Image 1 (cartoon, rainbow, N blue to C red):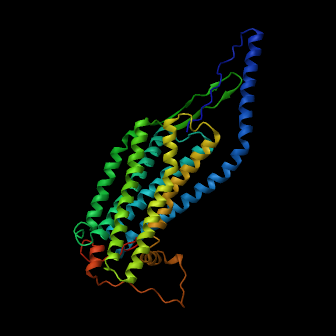
Image 2: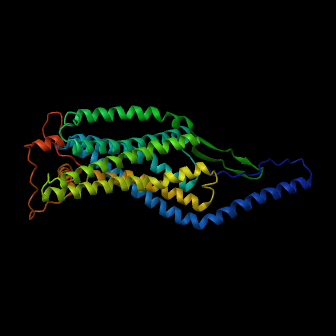
Length: 383
């Protein structure tokens, strides 16, 4: 955000008459008083912000970096976890990891200091990586929802399409498309700010801001492409999945045990995926739309704090994704204990979990086909 102060700049002419010198001194003194008065008025608010923001953003970075790295390592090292859904989870974790590393620390610096010190090149890189990672994460969720839709609504006819190599091809095509589509962000981001103000007896340092110059059309298109459309697609697909499950229950296809189990799992997945995605990104999207309609939005101090919290909530989605899409799986927890045995202490009195059977039935192969046609357990909740 730009925070520009307009200061009366001008050098003192030592050869001017006495009255001009006095006016210049008064002008300089007035500028100094304004600066220190503004700093004193903001001192109380800055104290709370300087403490709360680093703690909150630090928690996001810690959970996001550690959690996503755990998911990446476990999937890459665990052969039993290689499936279509897990390919998408791997891509989601990579994009979330890049989002947190390339965006969160520098966003915190901007919010605390209101001054960009990392240069024009990294300003472009930060905004570009932010938009790229955002789209990668969102559309990975869309593809994951589509994969679940095919597995539940069309379990047998989708076997030939739901393979690991096909999932890898989808992910491989997703990256260049998004990278190219966000080139305008790379070009429009730049560092702006006033030069140093020389008052003769006082030099006010320059203040720089890393800004992204978006047109109203870009804001509307990005809202539709990065929020409204993918969210609507996810809602529709999970609504169709829920309808499919309830239809099978009504026809008596499933017994009581499978009916209750499927209802719980499908409902939980719908609530978690849609609610977390929608709620995390809604405040920021609404703020950006409001700022497009009214250019004065963001001028008030409380509105700046609203933007801080909206950013934090949106960015936290990348930190909680490992918990939602990975740690809900018993198989993932077992694999995590195998990959990171140093993080767990052995419990001699507790019976070790039994390994999953390798013999697939017809339904399991339809749910989770891999390249060889054998059964591979997904990280996400199986339905």
